[in-house]
Length: 355
Image 1 (cartoon, rainbow, N blue to C red):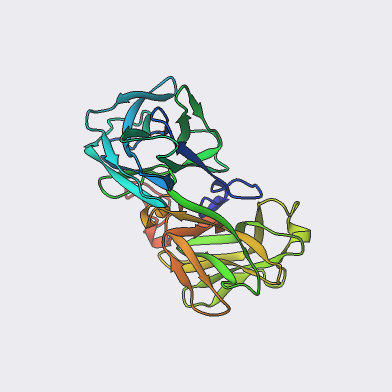
Image 2 (image 1 turned 120 degrees about the vertical axis):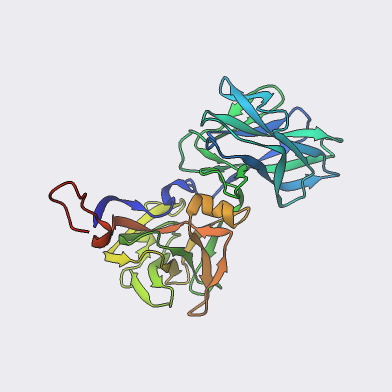
């Protein structure tokens, strides 16, 4: 066993801000001089093949837009393409994610910061022919790389403490880590009388792990209560806090804001490669709110959360899965369990363990 400083299995603390509502800020293209971007550090040696963006609304006939890979000058996109074909044109559709292929893939030689930019390209643009895109998500991330920035036609403005909503896809199909191709972020109410009335994540344990707590980012309204649970894939409950559910009067400093609630449990071992469900279930008719993040696709969700995806059910019915979404709920890992046969003794040294 290798003990760890306890940490969440998923990015529980880094997904959304602790505010009364989960907020996606949008960006309106109603002038050809506007643009928005993210500054990020690419994976050296991997070919960037697509840039993705989400159009949330259109007015009139949509203009043609383009995505671009640009160098960075004075902390903002320089306006200079990294390569002549490091761009791609597209016509957005409302409430639709677009993965736009570059005219030619671009392979960065290093992890030096570059920028991905969305800009107007052709056709009429103005108040009668405009497009609105998802731009950034309020987040517990500090204002560090990757970060979003926007150009109003005169100057670039950086946005700190938020996640940029732009996707970078490599030629092998993987999504750049740390970027959040999010479609929607919702904070929905659940109670014993709602359907569904239990939501959470199905996840695959990446190793033999010991967990010591269950955590959730939630909002408990006045008198709200809920229990946190862990099940095996057959539906057997392995752990939970049913006897002492989380309670707005005891576990929440303010019922108007989201907060992370940590519920310790007796240490429990999880097996490598095994599927589990970590859930929240209201225990009264007031209940709680739970955040759901929905991404462009399953690969984009995995780039942020790994092997974890949204499940929901009503009563003791079957779980329904949404592979593009996650609940902001996670077990806390306190140790990685390494089988003794995997610990080898160097043949030229004394001491250690026989393998």
